[in-house]
Length: 277
Image (cartoon, rainbow, N blue to C red):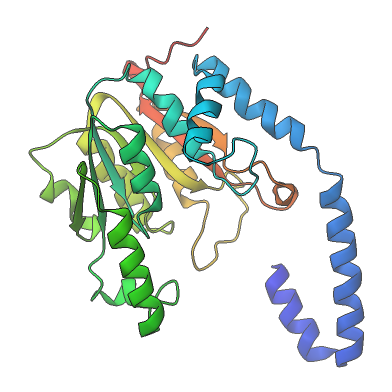
């Protein structure tokens, strides 16, 4: 809605008046965000971890050992979460599936945290039109840089990279089950719902599925890359008593004042075994 309003004002108003309005809007926006209480968001996430008996001190130490900061506002909390989930799995050897490899940075991170586990990560073939036409990959130079970075990040003994459209994951992995699934592909329907449904079919009874960039605002207007459709799908499953869902705030950052993203943590309802106090 804001983008549309900006476009209308830009066309309708003289340039200098539009710029004055833009400056005033930015000032008010910055003022409100400066007064946003980050402590409440931090407490929310940490209280959720405490509910799960996840050791926050361990998370801080592990992030620090990998030159990452627990307090970094740009670091998504799925990094914190995946360290914490090791306690849930009790350091067992598990099968992990990642839907949406992107540049392989998080895949590389998982492979270090779960060094005794096999990580399978899938993404579209680089010749796929959807792949080429997103994230500026139609630029040959940028594409080559991206592929080089991804190759370096995936060069780990416990990473298996599969070029596959995630619409086919259930068929491709029909003889395999996973204990931990990270859904970070297309965030729009129908694909995001297909990914969640297929992931549930591949999930072990006591497994965990986590979904990135969940928007819980039911009035949210979707953009090119993000929507509230994953939340609506997860909520539907929970309403039908199939899943139990929890939501972690993605980043502890001032911009949460305007738009808050979450990471979902879900298991089958009858097998929800997090050690909740």
